[in-house]
Length: 394
Image (cartoon, rainbow, N blue to C red; front, top):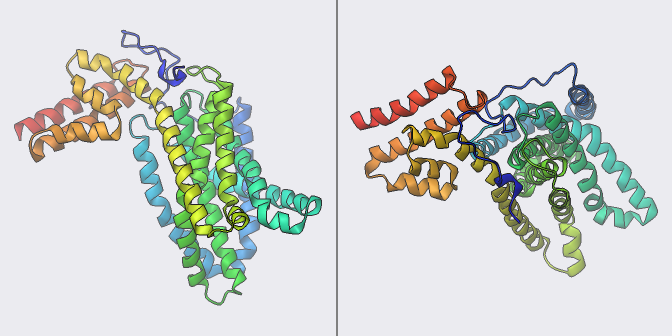
């Protein structure tokens, strides 16, 4: 069966269908007539209050640890931001949507939903089964439900706040990654502070560094990736103007995200049951999950590439870009690098790289104007020509 994300029509006319993804369009988070906007903003407000209540006594007890953890995990955040924006480079989602998604994950999903929910479920497991069972398996049987649901609620609300922006599974993948990244960073800061408290505040910087090394290394297989898969599943499950409802695939992706989350949290318990080193089990689980997430990410990116090809095909006809440049732009990273390396000499390779970047800007400008020749689109087209002519003249 073909992927619905790749079956986007390709009209010959320059004007895009109104159902096409709204790349480059602006969006307002506060929409007085949109219930989803009110729920989202109230959720952020209550989440901020909940986070303050968690951090306020902690920061008093171990203020040094809280400060160092905030600074170091902010630095840890920067490579993640670069990586995710690089993956979203072809048709970038507005930063405003990503920022509020990050805050929802870090404030609302973590402190308002997940932490109270986890405590309640683990208490139930301890009473219904045994305290030992709750200690070994409680996190694996609580976090996938409370944490992924909390993060998924933010993604769902953003789908209704920005329906012209989040229309493809890849859009849900990227937004979900930012929501999960917010959860991950705020949770890591809290873990570092709690680690310092467990040592009675004796060596707070050491406690932070220890947490940074552990959580930083395992963060590769953490919330950002689970929520990315969850977000793509929500787009399939709910459907958009571009993607029809695909319940089986949507539920499958959502369950996959929850299963991967649960398997990771159960790593130590699984290692104990089979009598092997926890590190080996965690490495095996992490490797399997990383492969699954990469395959899902490649699959959901097909719709984004189809959109980019549609909007830029007329530019090949008018001579703005070549067919080879379009193929490289909508292809994989390997195809893009192969195209750049095929140019002769450093100057031509640099020109090829800049032309692809300028063509991506042109696609964004055309998307913002529904394919019309707006002043922004004409400027972006002139930039493609300027880069090409400037390199040739040099």
